[in-house]
Length: 155
Ligand SMILES: O=C([O-])CC(=O)C(=O)O
Image (cartoon, rainbow, N blue to C red; front, top):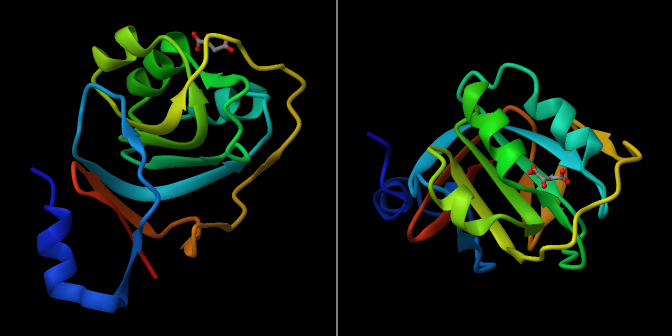
């Protein structure tokens, strides 16, 4: 049972950050929460795949993919890998592919959209960095809450 984001906002008000960017809910689990981890990459998914290959322990991976919709940085195989490793969710400021399969995978996934074109695999990028997207600071270790209403992140 996860906390409803609107109720959490009512409790905490401006002491919690709310993402106004409208993400698409694409995973098989709509409401998810957990301590966040981060990756920054651009049209390349080797780094996020290696992070999601590690034990997730109920964490949520936040991926700053530069808002690019030109290449998908996650497909059904990586989503299934993440689910199997115990990640609660993946939030991607970028694109996924294999929407139908990911919608049937028991993990939280939010992204900006989809594109069948796959990403490159150079491994370029950074992990465990603090990301700022749409005025919301995603600092590794802070708790993220996501449901049908949106995304809240601890300050
Ligand atoms: O290999 C990729 O780039 C991602 C992908 O399609 C998958 O996870 O199934």
